Length: 260
Length: 272
Picture 1 (cartoon, rainbow over the protein chains, first blue to last red):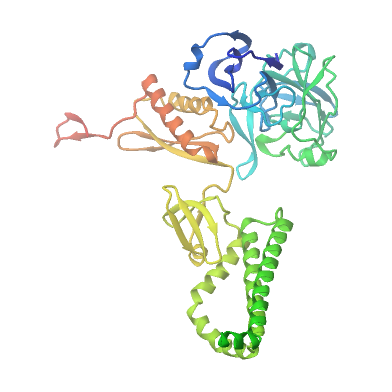
Picture 2: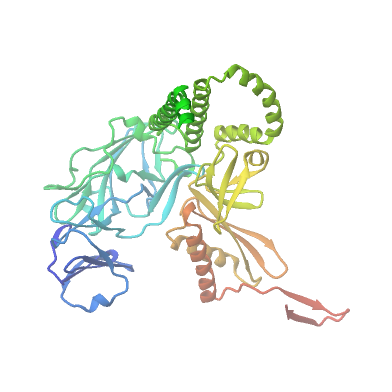
């Protein structure tokens, strides 16, 4: 699904990802693209068309760009952090750790160009539009997306939809008290996307919790996650995470409802 | 020709040439200093500080160039400075307001209650900060007018920075009929907020049964949103409230009064 496509002249590629329906048409000098959002979530559906009817649509956008006929359809992590609100409350007892597998809806990026994708971005839309939310106090926090999904702790139960990427997070409770996970902020800009041709995965995140008064330590994996095999890197992270774990850990707030 | 020759012979040409060189070189040095300063301080200072420092360099440079030119013309600066003492008193009296504005401007830049681009309210004027200058700030109102407000006024007036924080709360007052099931109404309002992706899930919407008014029960409906989305969110939420209330049969009552005539127990309901 994700990757490079060649569109013949005057042909239209129609596809659906998540809530979005895309039409891409290659003409003599330009690409035309239309995008509409529907209510229902759909899996991938590709159907090449060869008709001129769609030229009458009003919502075509015209792109004067590399006209070699190639386009790249790629996933991308959301442009803001994602705040997980687990559907079931999760408690981790002192000195225990556990892996969590969290499905995050990706954004869809379409580039034009035979090889390089630089400067050829035609559209960037979320596969599923998530609600906005705020992580922190009203005067000091982070704008993020709200993610209200079931969280799995068994890798074999992970069943991400095609427009979701599975994010493996390992949480260590190194404090003396029970860790109740109400909210968990996932910094998407530090995550890469890997693919095994059927599913998407991010690099691993490890979080150490050392009590309410201490900041949590967060570390982003530099290799492909161990949850699946034969993974290839599809998309790089937007920001390379530093090795300074303490710095990253401040992204977890410590009081009230937003506490992790 | 003789006059010109005499003029040139007297060394005035040399002086003029030196003045031109001073002006050109001085101008270039000032520009280079401004560029270097901006480049060095680009990441560390706010726009206001950059503007102030640039203007400080320009004014200082102009004064120095002026003094050099006066010296080239063999005009004694000490005499001018002496005269400037007297002139300074006169100018000082005349420019009290301007100096007050400049000092107020410095306080504003230090205090940083707003920045260029912020939406602020000063008195009854609301607009985006267009520029912060030495003497005044300029606001671009929402209907595209430019308002100049002296810095002294800003310093002595209450200023509301509407867009200081990334998120804001929009308070909407909604009146519903006394016959409505309030719990159902509140649930409906919560759902309207949840269904709109631009309304933030957290902080949670503030929903308060605010008042038993003459004709309705008034509910305060406060939803949080990203500050740039005011118009979009307001239009969508207002439309959604009307649409949902109409669909669910929740009445937003017109003002009405119950009239009791004399001591008769008959009641006449009239809607106004």
